Amino acid sequence: MPILLMGFVLCFSACGGGRQRPKATTDTVTDDYGRTVVVPASPTRVVSLSPAVTEIMFALGVDDILVGRTDFCVFPPEASDIPSIGGISNLNIEMILSLHPDLVISGSMVGKKVTDQMDALGTPMVCVVEKPRFEALYDNITAIGRLVNREREADSLNELLRERVSQLSSFNTSLYTCYYVVGFGAGGNFTAGGNTFINDIIRMAGGRNIAEDVEGWSYSLEALVKEDPDYIIVRREDSAAFVGMKPYNRLKAVREGHVIGIESGILDLQVPRNIDAILYLRQRMSK
Image 1 (cartoon, rainbow, N blue to C red):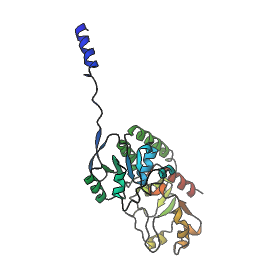
Image 2 (image 1 turned 135 degrees about the vertical axis):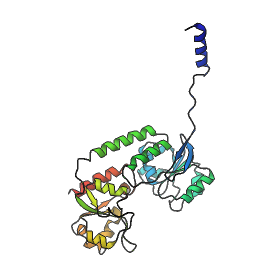
Image 3 (image 1 turned 90 degrees about the vertical axis):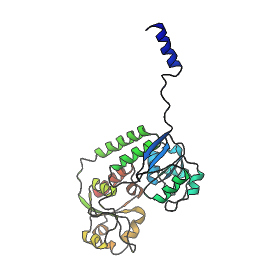
Image 4 (image 1 turned 180 degrees about the vertical axis):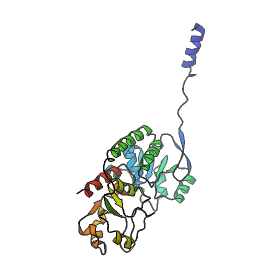
C-alpha cells in the first residue's frame, strides 16, 4: 500500500471514520394488544404488573432492574423484596409513577383503559398476555427478553425448556379423564376449556380434559356429574372446601381419593414452571 494511502487509512480509523454507529437508545415494539410502543433499548427501572412477567424476569436474571410489582407477584420468594404497587384490578397509577419507571410491562389482567392512561402520561407500557397454547410460553419469554435487553438469555432459557419438554414426548397421553376446578359452588362452575394452555398441560401430563370441547371457562354442573372424571385437579387452597361440598363429594374422583391439589401459580400462569406442573400431574396420575 502506498505510504500516503496507508496514512489516510490510519488517520481515518484514528479519527473515528471507521467507527460503528452507537447503538440505538430506543426500540419500537408491537405488543399483544396491537399497540406500537417506543421503549428504551436497555431499561433500568421496570415495573411489572403481571405475576408471569415477574417470574420470567427472575428466570432471565434481570430482577435487579425490577423496581415495582403487584401483590400477586409472589414467586420466586425474593420477589417480595421488591416494592408492591398493590392489586391488579384497581391499579394505583400514582404509585406506579412514583417509582419512576422507564418501562412498565403488564399482562392479561390489565385492560386497555390503563394502557391508554399510561400512554397519555408518557410512560411506555407494553402488554405481554398469556395465550391459548402451551408453546406460546416460548414467545412470551422471547418478547420479555427483547424488552429487557436479554435476548441471548431468553434464547438459552427457551432451549432449556424445550429440552425438558422433549423428554416428555415418549410418554402416552390421554390415559385419564381430568377436570380442573377454577371455580365452584353457588357462584357457578368454571374450568379451563380446550382453548387454553392449561388444557395443553393436562394433555401433556397424560390426561384428557373433559372440558376440551368447551371454549372459555364456564362449565355446567350437570356435565361434570355426567362425565365423572377419573381425576379432579384443584388449587391446593380450595381442595378441602371442594371435597367437602355437595354434590362434588359424590364424584368418583373424590370418593376414590383422586383429587390432586396443586399450587395455582404453576398451572394458572404461563411460566417456565408449567413444565413442573406437567411432571407433578403425571406423577400423581400414575399412582
